[in-house]
Length: 120
Image (cartoon, rainbow, N blue to C red; front, side):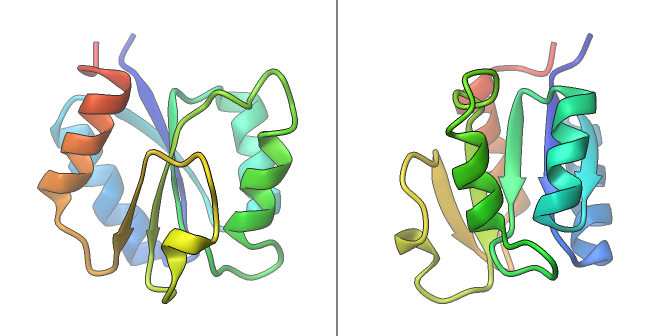
């Protein structure tokens, strides 16, 4: 089974683009449009990694990430922050990286591959 990445972003265009980039590189994906939804998807899908926007409606990515890092089952899932929010690198500790929007898809894949390995 291919490794799976949870895309957490409220912009459907970004989600679709990331899904295509991941699938083109052999990874599976699932998505959520805010932190509350992301928690439900996380429990159901059990992804290997998360790409995380910070500023979203209902629940921001920062709150979602802090919540999951307190739970033994999810605390070791790596996250890559992809956000247009200034100062995004200051928002969370223990993420594997941080990128600005617009982002380079090759760099996203490089971080994912370095973090969780090849898709299969």
